[in-house]
Image (cartoon, rainbow, N blue to C red; front, side, top):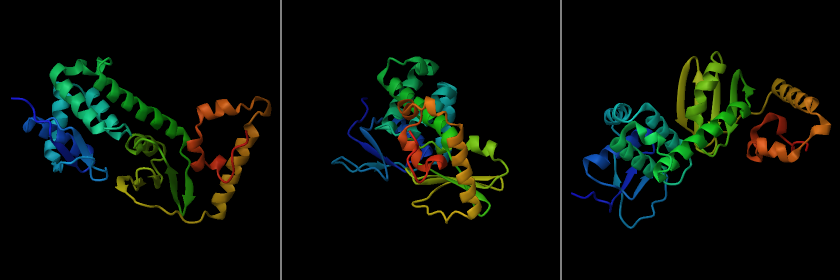
Length: 254
């Protein structure tokens, strides 16, 4: 019996919800031509079918991926889901379907279009997350640390453990302005919540002093004779500058 292909799915945008779409695809013998979340503009003449998120079912699918494919395949699927790759949900679905067919070797099949797309997306997320671990800048507000970032991919779940380890005794928040989410660490508790807009209070005099000191340190250690604007931009894209303390309020000296 052939799989039905004239169907689109609508899910809640979570990874658990996406795993439920994977289950639905197998259970109903369907290969959807699109998978939308609630925020995505739906370009179809057919009303998509909503796939409810069932946490128990998502856990079963996740366990099945680990047991029948590999933990690496699950990691790649999750990272692709976090990426800004077009049609990432469909890529994850087809990647996992291929994995259930061929087993753990799926992650090595880089010549396959779907595997290549998922692997490239996963590497892009990890690369951006690695960069942000060094480029996140915190400011202090009433005893808590806060930072704003604007990544291309939804890297908050990837970088959060790094900052929890680094600032285990601090209250801090990282706000992803692109994806409208905030990660909050307070009294050992961790939460990732949607936040449509964030307005930080005015910086205190002490905070402004520390910013000025950091800028002076940054300018002081620079070697004027070795300034290389093109190399700087290659290593530190301009899209990061807006929320970096050493560049705030003015363009960096080139």
